[in-house]
Length: 401
Image (cartoon, rainbow, N blue to C red; front, side, top):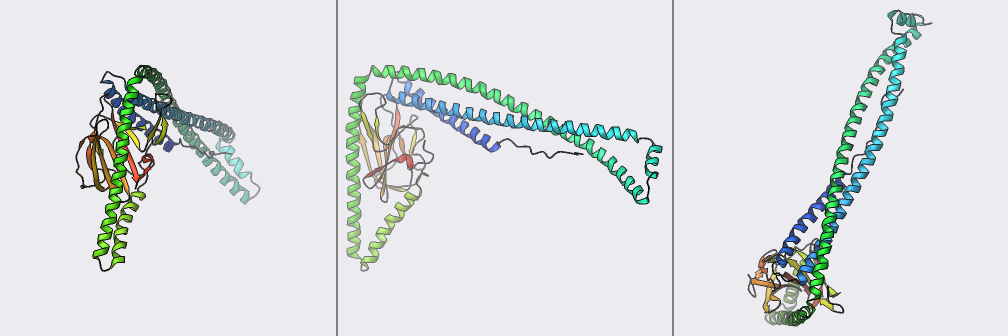
């Protein structure tokens, strides 16, 4: 006799579902920001590489959004399949319980009369058998009650499970509709991408001319960075030498001077992949050598990353340091170089500068706002260097794509 089967009800993967929903929300937030950037680049009524970059980023974000929706749908399908299996097991248990309960009722009917019960008891061959029959009748009556309670419990669980399954199905159907809508938006974005590319291809001469101007300014910036770093290293060496000359405990002074720089550099290194972004937005050009997004045969070399952002967005220092240099370049805007021990961060593309040379700055302190070029593109060129060696900033920033 089965009073109640053991039910191993697998709960839906709520944690995975929450992670997917958070991911979807992050995508929607990024999409909103990129849409703002696109609208600012199109205000100039002139197609630009910045607009193409923003549209390309928007397509990637749309694809990520669709992927997260698809994964959520897949997760819900798994939940539905699990629930259907649980419903099937519950229905089988309920059928079995009802069959056993029916058999109990039939047996009970046979001995339902008082005379039949007394006859059953007093027909025992011994007193021990009498007691056993009496105990059996008490247990049988209790079992019938328990069986009835078990049926009610299984019916209740089954009803809840069916309701939950219907709720998940409705949620899945809503997500399917969302997915279809997002795929339609993706098609529209890809059509826009083709249109932007087509318009830019007509502007090849202008793009090549602007590229040359940009290269000249970047070359000047690179030379400036190299000169500044050399000056800083030479200055540090001179100061260390002067301290050595003045100090009676020469070795001790040298160790202290060296340890100060090592401590600051070590702190910078320990924060790798944890640094805040200097500005909000998305990476429009990565570190190193790469093909030009439109001009065939043109290879770009980037010693940092470009972060495309919104108009007048505030630029912040990613770590404590000292402002080594502020410079201006016609095509790139203002540039601020901050020293962090053996490391330097370079922020190029500022309209206004809020710090001065020699000033100490703190993490997340505003140092200026982003400069928008004639095409209406707001873009920060950001570099990290260890002495003169250029490093990939994307590996140092928190949550880089």
